[in-house]
Length: 418
Image 1 (spheres, rainbow, N blue to C red):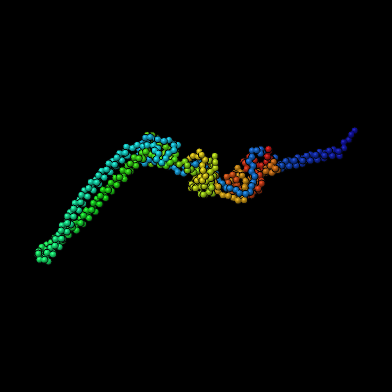
Image 2: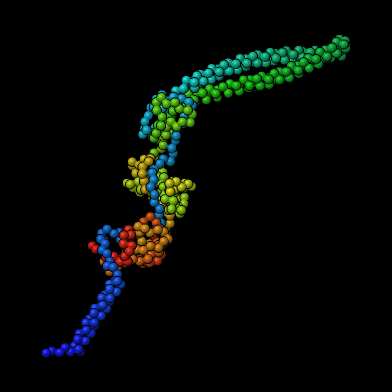
């Protein structure tokens, strides 16, 4: 008969407890270790990323906007009188000269007023001629009278001189001599009065003719105005260029000031570019600009900045210094780039998808020969259209991912697969 030993059972129990304890400790250690492990780096297809190399050197600060080519000289041709559109002679796109007739208006009242003005002028000219004849006749009569008195005066003067000698020779009496002197003196006075009367009448004649002449000139000016109104019924271009628009129709009634046509000179164009208001704070008149007309890039200079902000953009005008390509025409869509500043010897990189000027962002920098990328904090400075200044966090030669990596914001490291 076997008798169980108490010491063996106790040893088995202790061994079991030890195994259980070791298992618990091992499980706890594994759990803690697993909890402290970093998540595995996700894989990213490298061909889908935009990777840029950090550089040092000259960085051009630029802003860009969209716009159109517009003529430097645009002429709207308004109606100067009331009228009805009778004929439209040319359509938009036609090449015109300064005296080219674009359309014709009609207004019987304007034509009647011109006819009345012409008749009134002719009547006034006839009145002037008649008045001049009458005044000249009166002046001739007065001159004849003055001449007659002058002749009598000279005759009386000679008679008085002769009588003076006769008195001395005692051939006539003293009374006759005194009578001849009185007669000569009287005629001298009459001659002086007639001469003054002739001068006054001549001045009066000039004044009366001047009044009538002024009325004639007034009516002549009115006739010219009426004729110009009649002539304005044949609407002319006024400048050489291309007819762009005729916003009226045949039969339409127009009033003074109504725009009848628009003519522009297509050989002198400028660019109107809209710049986002957030980028427009540094632009100034005189800065260099480059206008991309799609076939070629034309250099120009900024000549005007609109003081108002509309729809979040600022409108600027760029004068084009270089020749435009063939086919350039008004309203052609263009891209404009304005050079704001030239930064010498700075560290810069291609502008990240979400990198704003003077901000700090997280960028993935390539390591291990481009097999992996780790997130680094980068402080950015001044920005341009496609580049941005690096203040801290990167060095020349570093390669960083500048495309959108927002879906890996929770990871500090990614693997790049080829």
